[in-house]
Length: 130
Image (cartoon, rainbow, N blue to C red; front, side, top):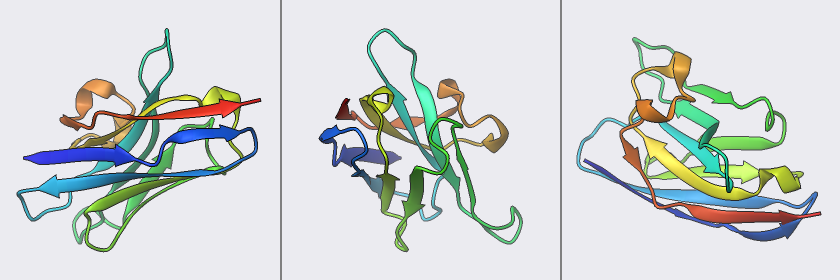
């Protein structure tokens, strides 16, 4: 079982930065794959960034980003595996929305599929003004 809780959302002007955190409580030893998604009013939930832990079989840590945030956002996890972060820089109004962290997906080739993730947090709101 995995429990997720996001924090760090807020309001910022365009060009500013925010850092989101997701606290991970898990009952199993292995670090699960994790991701950030976002959803704005009237739109579907979209994948923002994902991180898959590396191991001897699967290779090094794998990260991927939506094209719209590449070069601006950085996903990372602390050494304990208990905190997932999303560093967001050069924010744009279109980055506004509710941001959710998700855990446990077996399909890293299709990580943007909402249905592929098992656990979800409640979300944290990000608002970017022009």
